Amino acid sequence: MDFSKLDDKRVLITGSAGGIGLALARAFHSGGARVFLTDVAGEKLARIAPQIGAVAAACDVTQPDAIAEIVDRAWREIGPIDLLCANAGVVTQGPLLEARREELDWIFDVNVWGILNACRPYVRMLRESGREGHILMTGSETSLSYPAFTRELPIAAYLMTKHCVLAMAEGLRAELARDRIGVSVLCPGPVPTDLAANSGSARRNRAADAPPAPAPELSPEMLRSMASLQRSADEVAATALAGLRRGLFVIPTHPHTRGDVAQRHAEIERGLDALGSLA
Image (tube, rainbow, N blue to C red; front, side, top):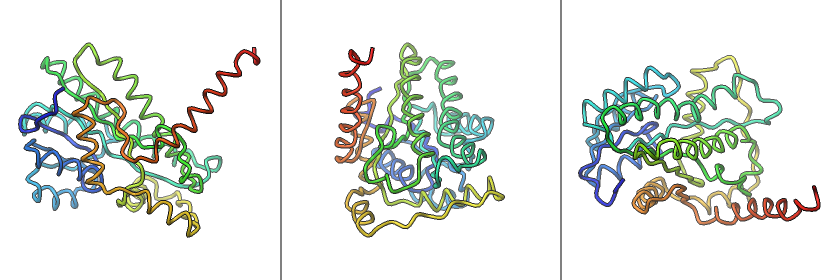
């Protein structure tokens, strides 16, 4: 799909009451696109949407019928959707071997099933109308590697879900190519957002009986390193739009990602180089 101009585009964005989702909404709206916002935080969404002239409705992406209704509503209210930004996501912390099943179900329900729940009705409507379209999934730099700066953080469950997002994007790109439906995966690094706080609120609503793991004590060096790597949500949104315009499948947003990916690639290469002696 051609994103060189946006004034003929209609965009649906999940998880858009703040952070990267809201920044994407601002970027597309400023380019002339019509935007429909949805988020589980209904009150916050209702305050924010009028500020950028967007249509909005609250929705929990873990509920397939609810997100299907939102896709249908967006299609009716702003017109056929050209781009679905499946952006809603949460994070949880704690040692993976100690994670409760409820905790893992929750993060997978949002970060993985939430994306698939949104894609299914969107693709169905595109196919029924014979239109082309595009899906932008928000993954993470942790979709591509285990970033060095995150290794003091007990976020292995998050890492698992974001690897799943990349695999899902790969699979859907192959499945949907004949339908003229493109797929890209946005892989942002650290961004100053309310992700942790919002995740805590969502988690309490879902699993109030499961106490969250305490936040880890991070060294001053770790905190400085994380701060030095951050880019703003608006910078990430601008990079996402530039990536869509270039037709990229993987859209990284932070330069340091190259080094982390190179480390993983080198480990894979070492394994392949050793294959002959392992047989």
